[in-house]
Length: 142
Length: 103
Image (cartoon, rainbow over all chains, first blue to last red):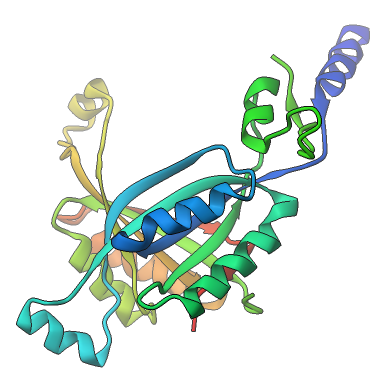
């Protein structure tokens, strides 16, 4: 019984909570992907993975484009890890760019991340370097 | 920022079946999706035991749907591209915190 209590205390000691992370998924046209990667990077996102993909959304006009073979279905899906506190700012900026940039339309959304292991990894993903302004204090010590 | 709540549905099917996924999803009210090509791995022993062959080339279809239609979309996918079909698909949903770019 006492051992169990000790284990729980040790576990609690190792888990520091605050500054949660989220996965930001950005789906944009392939030729505009680099500009969105640069934008997300400015919000202290240290890890981004871009994957080539293609879209399937159809509009009335796109049927004709498909027939003519000029439809541009090429997309890039960008998976980025961001801090929860940065999420509203990033989404708002991406939303602005979707409206502003010609042929720059897309969708972006954030998914919750429930847990992560490794202080160093958490520090990397949250850009929690001392003095950087990042609030890297969550995760489990290894 | 979107006021509605959304879910991300991910459907992993055998290569060449993404169109079937989209047909079923559209019938359930989904407007569009994004397809990523992937490579599946399955335990060889399990494959032999269950006498199932897992085609390694996969297509992953990502769809962002309003939470209200999530269940009907998942049911539609289960019926048309489920494990008993040619697509041998699995589908699941993940909650979305926030979304932009949906008109």
